[in-house]
Length: 273
Image (cartoon, rainbow, N blue to C red):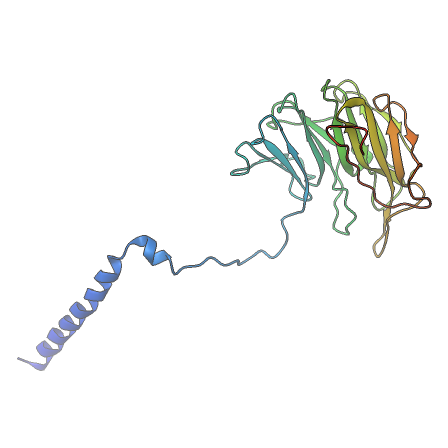
């Protein structure tokens, strides 16, 4: 046998020996082959946006809407297993609040402009409303509010809605205060206003008496370097006529300049706040 033939024969034997382990490895179940592989984050390193609000349809808690600080509105009908993005084609994706009617989950209100006080807070362009579960939206006002922190729908009438607008974060003026509509957003009336530096942080309706509402006003101003998060404009207010008129509360509350105030009313007894 020549030297060349011997080399070819040796190479063939070596190849056959190498194929054996390879075939054995290939025969290993796919699931076992992937057990040694682990996912790792490769970016991007930026945040996807804070969660501003969650609105749940309580008769079917698999349906809820999520408002994000910089990513628009998202809807789930599977209790969070999958989400559908909403309001992604309107340019301004900063969301302050979302409200869903508890008598009709297809009626959804969105207040744009996250109301937190960070340097990265983005402004919005007012109110949007959907009557088909978020498939389409219509702009319904308060374009100069910049930041909206709370929307309340009257439980007995979907056309009656009150909105707490915080107003511009980096300046004065704009549409600030509590606004009310009785025609589903066609027209608005400002029913509570303090001054050009004070807006609304929170707004709640009594679960046992829809004519009774509470609001917290908030005086704030951010500059490029600093934040003023309080003042004499901040306080707690009450209405007993569905939000048409308001009185400032003082009994038992701290005196002097106040900061950001959050409110809640007990569901079984609206007198407990």
